Amino acid sequence: MLVSVIIPVYNDEEYIGKLLDSLTKQTVKNFEVIIIDDKSNDGTLDIVKKFKNKLNFKILTSGKHNQSYSRNLGIKSAKCDIIVNLDSDCSVNKNFVQGIINSFKSQNIDGLRVKEQ
Image (cartoon, rainbow, N blue to C red; front, side, top):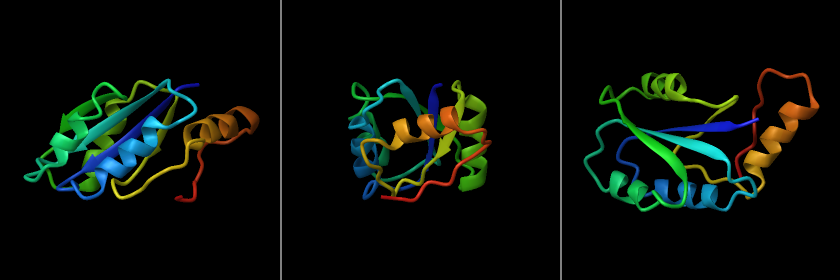
């Protein structure tokens, strides 16, 4: 099972680096990150691009200034079995992705709600 992590951003330079850094430390490395930028006018994309060689990610542009629209855009672009929505001001522990995969493998479930770190 593979995981797509969907992260909408808009002027989130203060937070996005911490989240992406926590994703680089995952025990599972085979997952995709989809950043949906709402046409940020700060350094958000500069920070995201620093992780280009550390994560498997793609950047989409929305411009709608609507988080729900951006999430849906990311979901439509997702290529994996499991979709995870994160906000840019989150950070996750190193077993986050593995824990989600394990939960889906071991239980007959359709979705999870995971407590933030």
